[in-house]
Image (cartoon, rainbow, N blue to C red):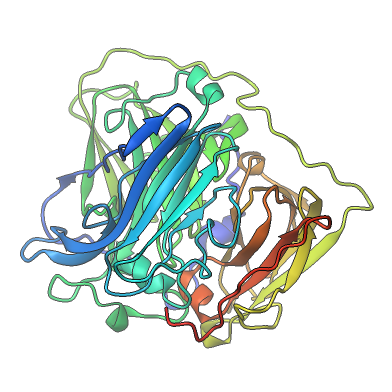
Length: 477
């Protein structure tokens, strides 16, 4: 049975003002670029050492001249960075860019504000920062991106984004597709425009979120995958500044969602379309067994061809997913659970969070570590004139309760760190932080974030207060 889509039909079909439709990029079809898996510098028992370098380079994206781009450990995007639950990571973060950047671990339960990599953790040009943390969350697809205030959007536009893959013993026991680049693919969805084959953030800038006219998938234009096994795992990440991706196969071929932002869902959900707002992830399985060699299956966003699957010969295969797929640590609430309300409002340069603009030296709210609160996240824009705001909280994963008082859909029952909040909607979520620190919460339309639709929460232990050095807004980024 195909589950109902997790947003209502109006939201799925909705395009707000200023939307730019995608066009086919110049040039031929190309095999989907698959980022390499980052190799550790060294391993000592359960301690793993990595180096991640933000750097400039050139990438062949369109026919003709190469495009000047930024990337991690390469010219564009970055390698897939593998983490394993229970292991400790020592990461050296190097900046070889001509300006300040930060390294934000989006979706990682980590101490803030310095290890988390928000705007309070700048790394100067030719400088470095060393961080150490132990991964204590379940298998999930998270990601790394810059977060300097107010230059996040431009740095992501230039190419800084990398998938981060957390694995654990339970996920390994499920026998999911795991041959990297054969039946297991990261799928980073972005859009860009080019000017004489070069990126120009200034030329394309839109305060309500910068859109491009060409789709890039893992930095590839007009991509395809040669399907040599019947079941493929696709780890989708919306890495765009503003665009939502409305994904479905041209022939409405169904697929199975097994995970969302923070890991596996309690039960797999069969769908025939899905929408990802900025920074959301979806982990899906596609079964191509009913197709014959030589056929092509096309994945669309709206009516635009996004990714082709060219069917080759393969042997029959079946995966029996257990029910439940994963056991969730449900966050308990009752009538005494504290409630925190936060409101996203406005468009253009009038965007606000709780009626205020971001201030790096202001703590907007506080929550005790390991305490569960109910957050009511509202978008006051109306459907006629407003837009969807994707809402992200640093340093934790949360669980949805309802949307405008209505039950959530089947694929919203897992851990999340980013949710699309529709115009004129309030989403209630259960939020618990397990790490101390100062963390951001904000709209993940990157230009809204940079404009000031962002705030800070301090997670505290009443028995062990900490004083943080919070940088001023005029700190040179």
